[in-house]
Image 1 (cartoon, rainbow, N blue to C red):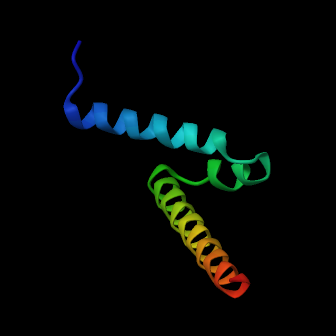
Image 2 (tube, helix red, strand yellow):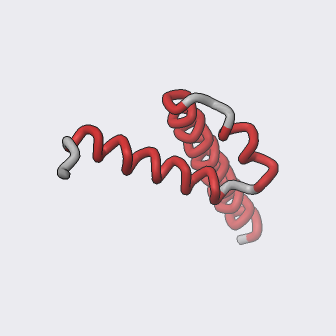
Length: 70
């Protein structure tokens, strides 16, 4: 039986969401697992955004440190 594309897309998104949660440190998993499905996606998107901001800040600080050393 072939599932409609929308249903298949939701299944794939949910599987990706579940894998993302499994990839989190144990201390963070409980915070996200108890949240409803729509909120879970929003929480993961927010976490990814914060992680990207942190990487950008570290990169900027690193470039600033390199300039100070030269």
